[in-house]
Amino acid sequence: QVQLVESGGGLVQPGGSLRLSCAASGINFSIKGMGWYRQAPGKQRELVATIFSDYSTNYADSVKGRFTISRDNAKNTVYLQMNSLKPEDTAVYYCNRPPGATLLGWGQGTQVTVSS
Image 1 (cartoon, rainbow, N blue to C red):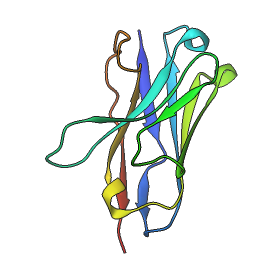
Image 2: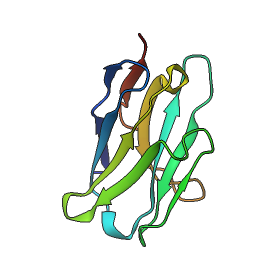
Image 3: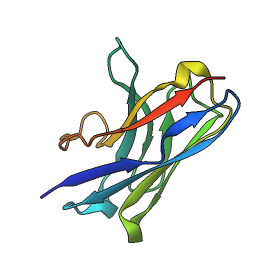
Image 4: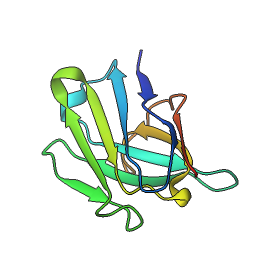
């Protein structure tokens, strides 16, 4: 059974940092591309960052230079280091396969709130 479990969210002041984790089980993790998505209230879910099996990465323009996606295949885990956080980064963050791949069942997500 495939399971994605996100963690690491919280409340942080503007300019602060958080590191999100996504633990995957039930899939051959090392050969899969993985992505981080986010959904803000009243908005559609959007792709934030992607990391492929060769460790190449892509980022949305809104987070480029501030967020870093990484992976640890030994732990079946993908991370999102978020620096210089802004109020507009407030959202529920999810991990999943990247667009174009067969999506897995969505996890519960982890809430990130950026506020003073």
